[in-house]
Image 1 (cartoon, rainbow, N blue to C red):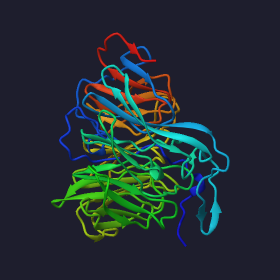
Image 2: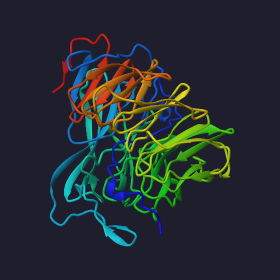
Image 3: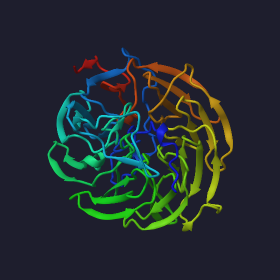
Image 4: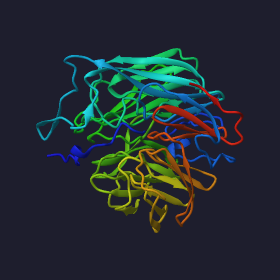
Length: 453
């Protein structure tokens, strides 16, 4: 009998999701989920630390539909995805799910009975004008989404030539920067227990890699597509139940490793071939937060039903579960949805209420825990960091700016006036924040505000 890890509590989602582009991206690019390397960290300087609805807003653009995918940035383009809901389609319903042989319907799953248009958009980085909008797929979806989620939750990725968008069972789509379709690919039906997909695509050399864990894990797999043609380069089965984390690529022992989180197992693959390199005991919880890394140390976490964060040194072989490669484990202070962040010497864990724990990355020593936001809040977006600051983005639309380091200090609170569910992007001196209705460009010394309505 396989464990189910509290599926009835899923909120998980279709919220966030991605890492690792190996292309020579410009310094100002933010080409994927959580930016360069999937870490959520920018090396830029001179970024704004203060804003409000009337301060440092360069532009504000309405975005149609519902999407929790993050914006990505390359050159003069910002890309994002969205899902536009249509009318009820009589007789349409989600794929059937089973838990331990019994049919299961998620009590908060919605949307499978309606027509949807899944779209990819390009926005001009300077003006906020929508340059093009393409409908990648239209119809009734294979599965439901959580009522707080979206059918456009995976973040797209770009190599500077094409933009790759993943919509779960509804396919993978590649467009050039002018909106011309390059290719599309179907990966088959991917059941998500009625809450939607969240993992984002990863680029590695000539491949687009996608972790496709589904339902009870009987049909889970990870797949690599040729990024020029969309043809499958390799596909490997995984006995790992549905997850929403995005894998990460690290270099260890002179080789690249694709590390994928999971409830039953954490597995490292050769990203060129899909060959398994090593594995460790899984998180035994819903794998929603994405891994983070620096060097060959990878930190994976989960927040429901158990809270756990574990640090593993990559580069091993076989089962490393009970070996010195498992550096440390922490069993509180983790989130169900937001991913942790590693910045400098420390890993910052956070709960869904924004309570922060700072852990020394190599040793696991706790530097502080219980660091709270100045007002009660909840969070879906993952943190980003730059210039010695860590930014947390709440569902109320507030951004809390923390000083990085071994003591907790909230420097300021920036209200936006619009709920935030998606993780922001940082590029070219600007922070791009996707609210529930608008995409905002926030930058210092902004020219007279241009509002694109």
